[in-house]
Image (tube, rainbow, N blue to C red; front, side, top):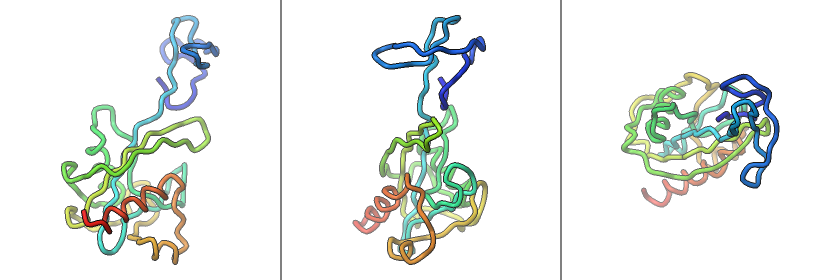
Length: 177
């Protein structure tokens, strides 16, 4: 399995060919006689929401460098999605939350056009369930709290994949979690 389309077999190094398997074109290793699956990478993020708005981080890594989004990232192999979301929140912003405090918000499938796909599981938590002060940390240029109004009045640009997540988190807060 690979996150990007493979050219060579990860087991034996043989060049892959395209072969119809299960009604779809797949990358296939003729030497190993197996499909090299191209699967999305699992990701998770958590929207921290309070009266000041939704906590967003401005990305300092590709893809989406310079765009704002809900803190999050890739799951580790042995890590449940809520644990990954809480870990990524702390790594990127310094804000800590217990994974058990998170509520499921959404899930989306996306690609940035370079052949890699992700499935991102989104969580939400009220700001009063968190500890720490939001600061710039790993992979982040800036952090800030935004409502739809303050975001519209700023020069911040949301990363396309996070537009719906931002609004869903704000709606969750406004409906009285």
